[in-house]
Length: 456
Ligand code: UDP
Ligand code: UDP
Image 1: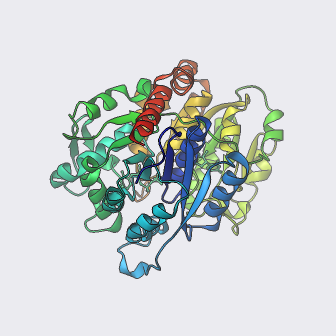
Image 2: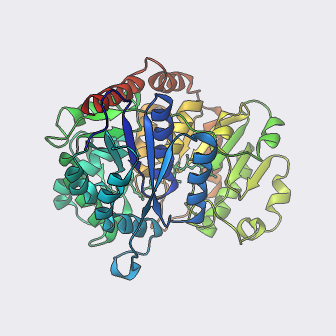
């Protein structure tokens, strides 16, 4: 099926679950719409959480009202039939098991798509369906090119994986310490590993890969991917990042930031769903206190994204903490508008888990990062941050599953160094230039749109 000739391309986007995956899809939707594409956002129902469903609804209502939603109703799915308890991995599986329903859904769309873009976590299940529909098939990779190289090379490299020890040879990246790779990949037979392997193996079957990164930051990895040195016969990998954030939320922290001196505040956040242990949270609190710096700390005590009700801050941080830091530190448990915080002139540093969206936002806003990865792709992303000069990464700091607790004294020292360290203005310029008019990422997106238009 193909749309009538002469029209702008119609791009259908299919995200999976988790703010880290949803966010770049919404940014891509907005970027395509801004360039005149007809965009359909396929939204899996039920969503993984009410918060994500609301986030999509806010986006459609306020940020990009011309993007058309198309509901993808998932088949009932018994979590007991999958080898995981992680709500996000289970949602990936629910979407994958409903893949055959996409064909009729696409056929019902008001206009046949010129291309379908699916999320990395689910795409392999959709390859036969999209092929049968005769539509060009693209994958959006939502993290770093370094992580993509691992994803592509893993099926062949995994044979040499020996539990938790040693290194893993990833062509294009070199010998990676095994401790840097996502925790579930080191355990035999789990749902995430099975999906990861299947996706890695299917990459040569799509028409192109889109990554939310940019040449200046990850040029060597991108070159290796496109030279076929990571794995042979990969389709073209196009960097289109850093995709600009889309305005969605009001921010209650801004009045407090307005009252702080320029570049004096360290912003501390571990993303939408990463909880620290109670003990580690207290040490981090002590570290921020000892650093002597002003800080804005977003605390999350639950794993599932935006909703974090229940536990009181005093209970998490210890009696008297909030009183002691009053005026100098603001601790919040709400969802904040992170991009607005990073853009605020009072913010001078970012203690971050290095979720890839956070890294791209720090670069766009020119805020130096102190990397404290917690799980998944985040150690690889932290490595990119360190190599690219966007910040520092204390390599020994533990992540989920490692018992060691990082002490407050050490954290305080690193935070002081972060705030006294060099600026990252050049990197910010590179990032903004890449995505702006005439920039390489911007041109890359333009070439894809032209290709899709011709294919129509
Ligand atoms: N985010 C936000 N407010 C919060 C927590 C997160 O706006 O309180 C945004 C953040 O700016 C980023 C996304 O949610 O765009 C989180 O994605 P990331 O890849 O950084 O990490 P993840 O949450 O997937 O671990
Ligand atoms: N990932 C991948 N292939 C898969 C599933 C995940 O390459 O089949 C990547 C994903 O893009 C992310 C990392 O593996 O970079 C960890 O996945 P998770 O869904 O936990 O993402 P997070 O919320 O940490 O972004």
